[in-house]
Each structure stands twice: as C-alpha cells, then as structure tokens.
Length: 300
Image (tube, rainbow, N blue to C red; front, side, top):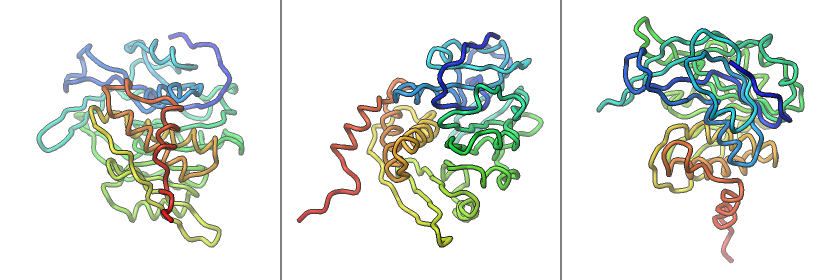
C-alpha cells in the first residue's frame, strides 16, 4: 500500500484504522472506515490544521478518503483491525476481529518524530510503551486510552480490562483524555490517574467535561466545563472529535479550560449530522464561543 509524501508536521495521530462492519460476520465485505485516527484526522482538517496519520493496515481497506485530508503513513499488515458494533435493547455489543500488529517506537519514521501535537489513539492495545519516549519536550503529547482498556475473547467479544501499562505512559503525557464510560463511572480510577499525569480531561456526554489539573502543592484543581446543547443525530466519533479539538486549542492557547470549552462546542456540533458531516470549522466554534461566553459575564 503506498505512502503519501511527508507534509509539514502539525498534528500527528497514531493508532490502527479499522474496518467497522454492521454484522458479527467478519467475512462481510461491507464496512465503513473507523478508528480514532480517522475521526481525529478529519476533525483536525476541518478545524484548519494539517493532520498526519501513522497507522497499520492491510489491503482490505480503502484509505483514499483519509489520505485526502492530510499526510498518511501506512505500516504493512496482512489485514486491518475489524470491529463489529451490534446494538441491542441492553446496549452495544462489540466484537474485534483480525487485530493488526503492534506499533512500536522503531516503527515511527524519523520525519514523524517532531510534531507540534501528537495524539496516541490505540484501539486494540497496539501502541507499545516505548513509543512515548521518542518525542521532544516541545511536543504536546496526549492519549485517549480506551484501546488499552479493552480485551477480547476467543469469539472476538470485547470486554473491559484494567489499563496495565498506565504507569508507563502517564508520567510522560501532557494530557490524558477519556470518557466517564471508559472507567465505568468509577472516579477513583480518575483520581489515581491524576497522580501521574499533569492534566486529565473526562468527557461526560451531555454533561460537558471535567478538567483535572495538578497544582504546585500536589492538589488537584477540578473544574466542570458546561456543554453546548446539541440536537444529536449521530454520536459516533464524538470522543475523538473532542480530544482532537481540545489538543489543538490547548497547543494554540495554553489554557486547558478554554480548550475544554472549545472541544465541548466542537464535539456538540459534530453529533448534529451523520458521520463527519457536521464537524464545524474553527471560525464557527469561535463564533459560538464569542456569542456564548463562559464563564458567563457577571451582571452589575
């Protein structure tokens, strides 16, 4: 599979792309392109930035749409990681088939090692801890950890599992972004992660997000950032849209609370249309933030 020519490195996202199929039959040819890297790259491009994706995939997936939004470096694999998402009256049941091989530090080409921002977006525990050490201090390094928090049985059925490599990653991250669903609502896990990483953001679906910041005295400042009310059509990829918007705004302003508000607004617009169709522009997000300031101005 060909690799596109390098472009100036603005935002790098690393992890598997996926074939997302509508049935439990892994042999089906029907799929849509998925994975954190896919949603993150599209979001970054729509927000006016220049994404680059480093992934591993086989010839069983068409990556031309991903290549169209930015740089693309594809590591070889005999197959592409495949997920089946089945929706039942009791919730989603997920299956994982044909996980592609791991991505380690040695797999990252030298020209991809100095981005302004890097997002680690594992899906099937594919990113190895040594990858965290290859980026320079000036790079903003962040992760969305759900791919380190899932396992699958012999039938492919996906189950939650503890993040066993957390302490190898967290001290080297500038930010960790995860959802309240990732920890099954257990805030003690959030509190534990906060002792290792300086900045953590927890998304809470319609409730907005919460920012946890380490203070000089060792305490944790906790701030709830309100959502933008949305008319939800399709929530797929909302967490990845949030993470991308948060990191790009954080790199731009250095203000985690402003970045969380920016990301809340971006993700809320994104769920108002199918797929990636409603992800807004940078200008649209700023216009909304200007018209709806937060914190609200005090009345005299």
